[in-house]
Amino acid sequence: MVDDAGGSTAAVRVRFAPAPSGDLHVGNVRTALYNWAFARHHGGTFVFRVEDTDRSRATDEAYHAALDVLRWLGLDWDEGPGSGGPYAPYRQSERLEIYAGVVAQLLEQGAVYPCFCSRAELDARAEQARRDHRPPGYDGHCRSLSPAEVAAHRAQGRAPVIRFRMPPGSSTFTDLVRGEVTFDHALISDFALTRSDGHPLYMLAASVDDVLMKITHIIRGEDLLSSVPRQLALYAALAVAAEDMPRFGHLPLITGDDGRPLSKRNGEVSIAYYRREGFLPEAMVNYLALLGWSPGNDVELFSLDEMVASFDLERVSKNPARFDVKKLEAVNGEKIRGLVPADFRARLVPMLQAAGLVAHPPTAEQDRLLTAVAPLLQTRLSRLTQAPELLRFLFVAESAFVVDPAEAAKTLLPQTRPQLAAAAAALAGLAEWDAAGIEAVLRAALVDRLGIKPRHAFAPLYVTVSGRRVAPPLFDSMALLGRERTLRRVQAALDVVPEE
Image (cartoon, rainbow, N blue to C red; front, top):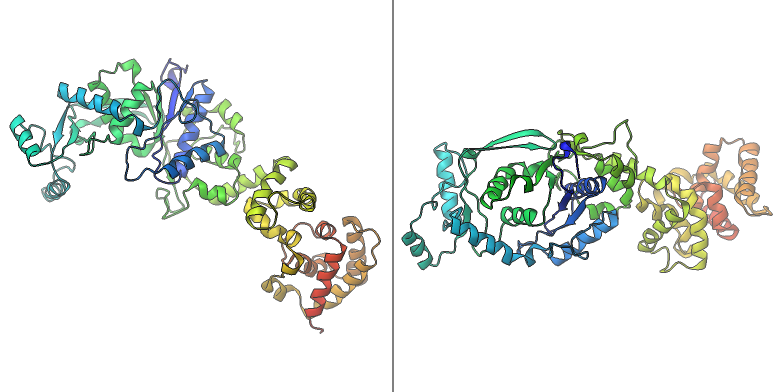
């Protein structure tokens, strides 16, 4: 149940209905998230429906990938693939008989008609309309064909699409995000409901399913706002009662840095990409929620449960939302720091395994090192994919360890040789090999005796031990690396650094 602002007194039923023709993108998932949060906030039902009637584009691979992404994000569904429900099946490719029956009904009552125009004919008439400064769109060429003309076209082997007769007048509705919206039907041409092979198009399948599945609220992107008058006209032709029609809410556009709609031309849109790049699902849903909505009071970090508690459509903005990867990284870093250590460690393992640094499953020694190093790394990451390079020095076989040549050229210079030699001597005499002891002897040897400022004293050691200047804390890293490997690496550096 929702109040008047939500537009219904019926139990909330919303749906997410992607077409499985590629990876789910940022806009898809924000739509899913808002629908899911709206349903959970109102104690309603979240339906996952698959719009896979376009056989030229839909693939099973994309279908299963969509299921996987939603599960990864924690957006569970109440009805849909794998969950069943009272309105199954939830794949439109398995509901073709239903749509065919609706088309037959509409043909019988005269609400639709067969259109035999070929694509070439449509394009030619559209070009002529442009030259004549007439409105674009279908010109009603087949709207009033006689039975004899229809029969003649069929005798020629022409397969028609089925077009809906858009009634005169206008449509006015209250969008739950944008307020009152009016469309003049004179600007809306008769639209196709089926392809020439009889397969349903989006407008038919989506509208029929929304009614049959008793969807109460359709929350989707603003690019579909112009579809509303077509759907309302189709509902009327199907004699859907006013109280049974879904309410609409259209979400703001998501743009790239250039202000244009986010696409592969101005940004990465695939959620699978961000998953591979080491973004946490908690960070993705948190950041996507902020693309058009916020809980207020300048709160930017929240859990899914906290989002559910405060989510409403009244706080959804009408203005475009800019997708900012740097902001996403900042949110991701905060979410990484907020993980309990054991959870953080567990999420590192797949990244290190993918990089070939950790076995499947990790060995006992790798387990020990992971447990010890995870807390040292947790505050330093904005993406989990940064972990392999930061930890390569610790997990790589000693024979495969290399110092980054660019880092060596900047840091391992003749003037640093004395401090490397002093460090080697100090470490060789250390009785207890731990971080505190290592720090004490190195500070005494390099800072106190040689008078080198700490920032300069330890930089060559970072590169010598880890192969790079950015790594977990130096003294902890050396402790975990162990006496033998640490001293071997320091000596290897001394062997190649020339004397002044």
